[in-house]
Length: 56
Image (cartoon, rainbow, N blue to C red; front, side):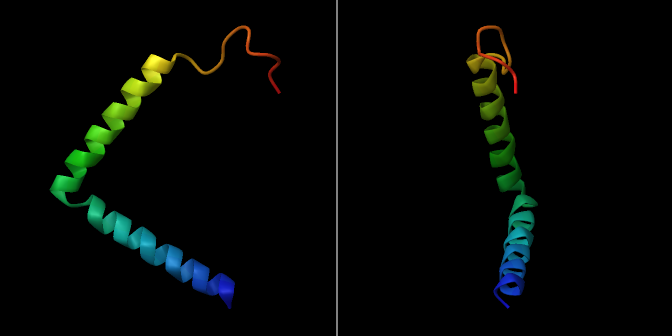
């Protein structure tokens, strides 16, 4: 019963997120956020590199 309730709650939340993401003002905020995150990733450098220990 708890698993089913969790799934219903998750699907309702996902539907609300999608509904809000379709609004033009929220699309602008999302694009700005993605651009900001992209800039931060560039500043941090690459993921893999020399001197970071063995790859597992």
